Image 1 (cartoon, rainbow, N blue to C red):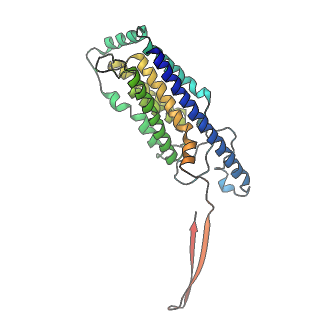
Image 2 (tube, rainbow, N blue to C red; image 1 turned 60 degrees about the vertical axis):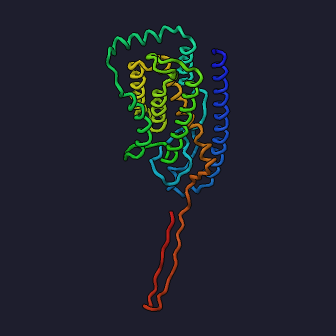
Image 3 (cartoon, rainbow, N blue to C red; image 1 turned 90 degrees about the horizontal axis):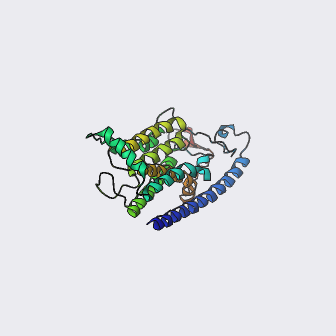
Length: 295
């Protein structure tokens, strides 16, 4: 069993690194293309100065708008091995708990929760798990809250992130088949509720900044606590779920440049077009002018 899990993890991270390398290659090509565009823009076109990509290594916020804009430079879209540290540590600790059946931490945490809970349980976690993801999609429509991407890009990142979360989470559930503490089934590892909540929380942090991310992580941590409180998961299950959630959110942003290119999304600003057409009405012997402007 341990050998099988090791092979599964090795294959999983091999796929992840391949996708990341693919995303990085396409991101670099976009950087090169947009750098040329930026250098060709006239200095007199000051109206576009706030939207021109200078690729200085600093991330910039764009107001939420469905109007076209040049790809913004956001470091979250660039793959970095440092971004694997937090989810890697959480997933590693979660796997150790799943492999070691005599893990004393799991039993200790469960005993504490049992004493605290008594005969009371709650279903709040079944609803609270959706809050971070829903907030991620909704915050950009609230006036005054700035997002790093427009609505379309946020939707793409959300779909990709949640697809990755489902693939990772249910993949482990089908392979490891760990029994829940309450003996209800063998789908304990990892926690799907926690994975979903942490995916939304990390998306919030990456899109709207640390302040909003903290709110998302508070809700996600509450979900993790309630899964333990309700005797639905072992401690290592929620650690693994949290790691999967954070990693999935980052996968969504790593692959965003690739999806833009595959979907042939072009966010370059169009030059305004103005057409003036004179007209003459012989019936009334009048002259008119039609003006058509496209921005």
